[in-house]
Length: 502
Picture (cartoon, rainbow, N blue to C red):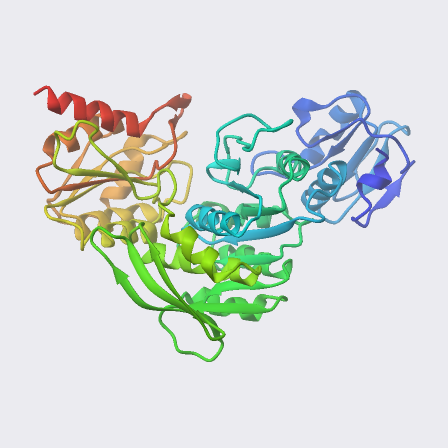
């Protein structure tokens, strides 16, 4: 494809021939090849503009840059743009034929709950007769069976997700594959990183959903205000927004958004609220129950998943589906059987029934998510709530002592351990966490997570709930040595067997 065609949606100033044929789009200097267009991306550690000469020596046909660069060959074309990340997204979107054109697109953003909400929307819209694809933290899915990319008959696409919103090359390829397989609606988790890095810039979302804004990713955004600004950008590229009015940042979105905002609330009687969740009940065993009202419609909702936060997740999912024209009966039927997703308040039962305590795995890795996870167990507990958690390395360190404090204050007992320490010392991370526990005595520190889980299971008594936070669906542990296999659920199942043998 010609360079000018790849950049058709991006204003560019050209030096040289803009009609050159481009063999590949490259933003990683390690993948340079003859005839490519090298897009200079400024990252956290490296700036692509420093690799222009390497690109020319490798035979690049064009350089896409944000400022003038020295070209050692007159055969190379320079395309100067205002934002190379935005250009990169549009180039891949064009390369794959603008795959979202003709698709209904739903974008979900928020600190907590994106995955559960995306799958709840998927369930509702499928009950309404649509063929739905999901892109997010758990990977990429169409249908229900775990098969390969569909080339004729497979009804599921799955790609292990390295990040919530994939990089443009992967994202637009997946969207193209989905469209070619007959998908008519795509539900996508849209992270603050993706918005800040313009990954979804080419997409006009039919509906954008805002769940909440907590404390996370401050290592990247630096301030919560910057974090909010990144989230709010989604509501400048959508046709309508479904927004949680009960979160103060949700109310601020109306000031930032260019699209109409439809507010949802379980707490406020404000006139601007369109969707309301009333008569909320959190059952011990039967999940959640509430009534959804909007424009004279009154829908009794029941779902087997637990917790007030899942009330909001299912509620906003229902509002988004209704805004897309789904029938009320589809909302009710889908949520009545929606049991959540892997690693989200997921109970891991003893297959042999020997152990009379409960183990629950959840992905919570922020202070707000930890609080919500512990709080929702209050009406279910018969014994103690024992919370096992760690904090990720090379990530926002300010939340570590906060999570330590929440764990010891809101749990009966806490087991503080590791969780993806990456390049940081796990002991340094533990020290940060311990700054928040104060004089508490109801905790133990065990650095090795596998050992910590086995210790907690040995300690558990009848009626206790062991809450394992942070890993969720992940089947790995990231250390300075790299990504190592670590299956928390399997460790729990093995622990049941060991306890049965004692």
